[in-house]
Image 1 (cartoon, rainbow, N blue to C red):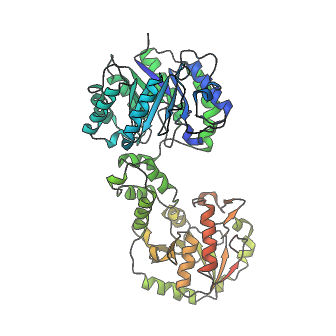
Image 2 (tube, rainbow, N blue to C red):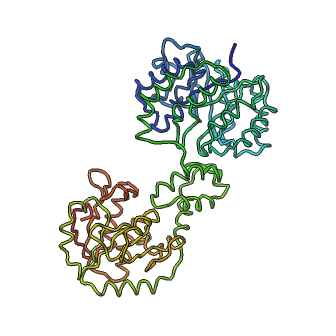
Image 3 (tube, helix red, strand yellow):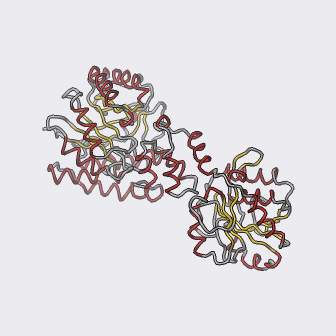
Length: 519
C-alpha cells in the first residue's frame, strides 16, 4: 500500500542551482543510486531544459537523455523532472522512465503552466502544478488558482515557500486553504526553504496536520543543498518519518552520498541559514536582494536590515537590481556639511611634505622595510579601512565592517570617516560627505582608495605616494591580512579604477612604493 506521506529528493534539481547543474556524470549517477538504496519515494533528477546539455549537467532536453543516468535497479523509487517556462511539446510520450513532471512558474505565467500541464498530461505524465512564491497570493487569488487546477485535474499541486517566509501558523493557514478547496484525489506537495531556519520544524508540522485521506509529498535535499540559504534536509525528515511512522528509509546510503558528494561542494560553495536571508523572509522579499547587499562587502547586518525594510511591496516578488542599488546609494548618501572638516584635514596635510596612502594590499607584507625607511616626520600616512603594522597618522574609514578592528588598534591615530558611518560611530575626528567622493565625472565608483584620492584632490594635493594599492594579482584580489578580504572581487571594477586614476586624476603625480596594476 502506498504511503500517505512521501518524500521527494530535489538535490540534483534545486541543489543544482549551487553548481549550475554541473555535478559531473559520476556524481549524478551515484547520487541517484544512493537515493534509490535509501528508498526515497520520488527522486527529481534535474531540470528539463530548452536545449541539449552535456552529460555532466543535471539538465535534459529529452527523456532519452535521462535514461543514461538512471540505475537498472530502481527499487521502490519513482523519478521526476522539473520545468520552468520552456516549450515541452517536443517531449516524448511517457514510457514510465520519468513518471512525474513538476511545472514551476511565477503567477503571471499561470496560463503557461496550465497549458503545458495539459500537453504533458496528454502525453501520459503525472504533473504537479508548482506556483512559486505562494505568499504573494491573497487567499482569494490562491483559491482562484486552485479552481483552475481543479478544472485541469493534474496529479499534484504544491505549496511553494520560495521566499522561506512561512512560520507554523502560515503553513497551517495555507494548507487548510488548499485542503478545503482542492479536489480530494489531487496530491499536495510542500517545498520549504531555510531562510528562517524553520524548514525541519515546518515539515514535521505538515505531517501532523495533513489529512489522513490526502496524499502528501514533502521536498527535501541532501544536506539541504539548494539555492542559498537552502532547503529542508532530507536526511532529517527521513529520520523523523522512520521514528514517527516506521517508513523504513535507509539512512546510511544518504549519509554516504552527503559525505562523498555533497559535503565537498558545500565546503566550496556554502549554503544554510544566514541572517540576511532571514531578513529577506521577514520582509517577504526575493532572496537576491539580500545576496546583492551582502556582495557590497561593506554593510553590516543592521545596514542590510535598514535597506531591506525600505523595499516597496511592488518590488518584492522579482529582483530589481537598479531599484535596490538606488536604495543602497540613498542609504549611503548621508548629507553632511564637511566644510570645516576639509579645512582641518588641509591644515594637517600642510604640516607635511609628502602624503602616503596605504591600502591593505598583500604587497605590504614584503614592503615593511621600504615603508619604514620613509621619513615619518615629513610624511602624512593615511591608511584606508585598516591600521597597518607600520602605523598611520590618519585612518580613512568608509566601511562599517572595519570599524571594530580599527578601534582596537587606534591609539593616537586620527579617524576620518565618510558620512554614511555617522549613524553608528561616535568619537571620530573628521567626517566627509560620502556622495561627494563616489562620483568621478558622473561615474559612480565606491572603491575606498579612490574615494580618498578624490578627497585629497579636492583639497589640492598634487603629489601622492601609494603602498598596498595592488589591484588584482594572479587574477584575484589579495590582502595583507585575510580578515580584510571584504572587497568585491570584480575584474571590471579594477579596470574602472585604473581608468579613473588615469583620466580623472591625470593631474596628480602618483608614486607607487609597492607593485601595483594601477602603475
